[in-house]
Length: 132
View 1 (tube, one colour):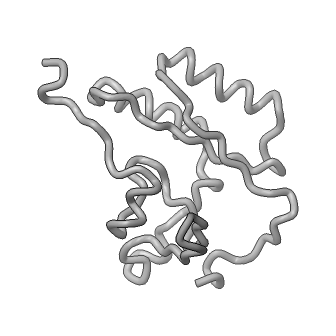
View 2 (view 1 turned 60 degrees about the horizontal axis):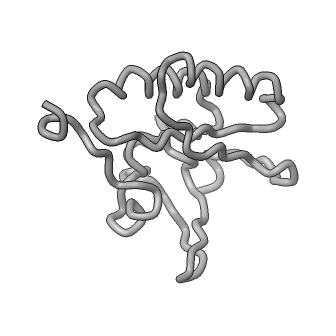
């Protein structure tokens, strides 16, 4: 069964921008954000945001333990490794809590935690519903 009926997840964050999709299994980063790459700064909006505007929840507002547990459940159907990203708000998650999240991922048998993305301590918090 290996390499026959399981999944390889696509697209990733970078390639999803090209095809106007969301970045695979990651939660929506934000209702509106700017992506910087070699082409410049590009505004990003999730697909059909106008239709489902009130249902989107920023990745930073989702319980990160839930993200880890969901990854552990789906991993058995993923043939190639999944790129699990954590989204950390330093005002809500401290060092010991972050350590517990990594330990949980290891205990549940996850192959990797790819990125640990964090909000800048200097970012000005604004209403997500007002930002678009």
